[in-house]
Image (cartoon, rainbow, N blue to C red; front, side, top):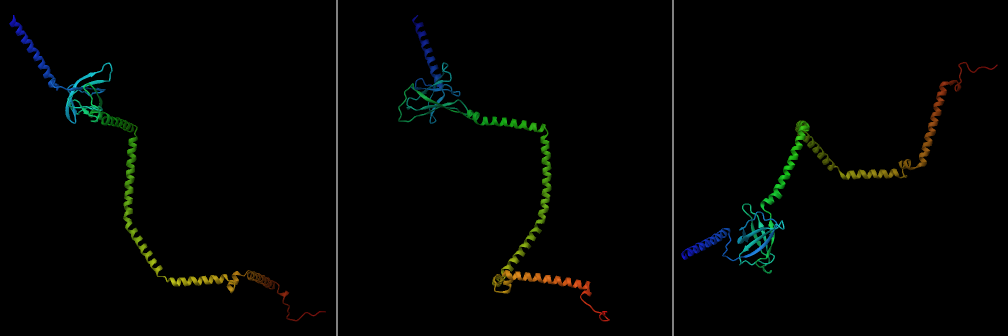
Length: 302
């Protein structure tokens, strides 16, 4: 009987040890070392991007702990409590925060950013500030994908406009107008080429005219400036004499009384000439009035 009890006790002890080793091994595989002491801290997140238990906690790229537990607050929706197990050698000052950083491949990780080293140290069981960095997919969704979606919408609108344009015949009319414009441009190009062919002769004429102007300028430069000044001086003297009254021409031009006398004399001469002309006409018309002669002498009176 005692032998059976001892055997059962041994079997129970072996089962308990096996179960303990199984639990320890399972946690060890998850990254949790039940035999190693650690400090635990809490973080309140609103979005964890698929973070799971046993996810690593890194500081400067080195793993200093892991995510021990994740619990969703059903009585306060939108809040998720993360429990972190950190190496007890790590001193966490106030102002430190835990950041969820999503990777392109695999589960996200938790990154620690420590506060000022001079700040008061946090104790195990305290709460860290939470922060979340948008992952690659978030950036694509908010950036590139949004732009692509906007581009697709604009492309759809453009295709709809093109379809409308094709259906109402405006496109054919536009193509006809473009073809007509192209023909006109081609004709204009031909005329322009012909004009360009005449350009050398025009340039030759311009060159000849330039040479003639140059020759004229040379002749002008050869004029005797002294002779020209002398001539201008003589003209100035003549003008002064014409404006003066101490010579005949000056008197004729400037003496008003002399002008009136000459005008009166001219008028009298005209009157006299007119009278003489009338006299000659009258003499021609009635010569007997002015000349009396007879071949037989004067008539005898009785």
